[in-house]
Image (tube, rainbow, N blue to C red; front, side, top):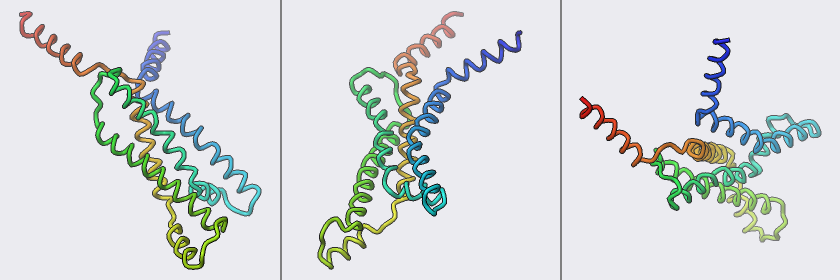
Length: 192
């Protein structure tokens, strides 16, 4: 019975860990966000003469991944608003790096999504264009942004994880940490 209690205690400690909680939330968020793309790719590969990987890559090229990036970084901006409002007292590590990354994800995702959608409209012929404008716009909107999309998505995932971790692990404030360290030092020095 003692071994079972020890295992359960370790399991409970594992689940209480902020990184574990953030990782579990990350898994479910990724599954939920990619589920439409995964299902659509499966249906395309079943119904059309294309492989699953081609269908999946085509969905990534379609710009849907850029919609996910703006949704993923919103918890960071909520955390930022809480920090500005004084509801969060902890000092965040790597905050400037994550803030710049969130701006990259936000601006990059918005511009890439717009670029992808405008390119689809230009190529579909929905807009009547002159011959010179048509050639120019075809050349302008012909770039493949798939790798940029993956980079933006990965950056957004890191920003999301950062915000999720700090949401699960509020920690103690800087002043509380300094005060407890000073009290501990005073007890060690003057208790003798």
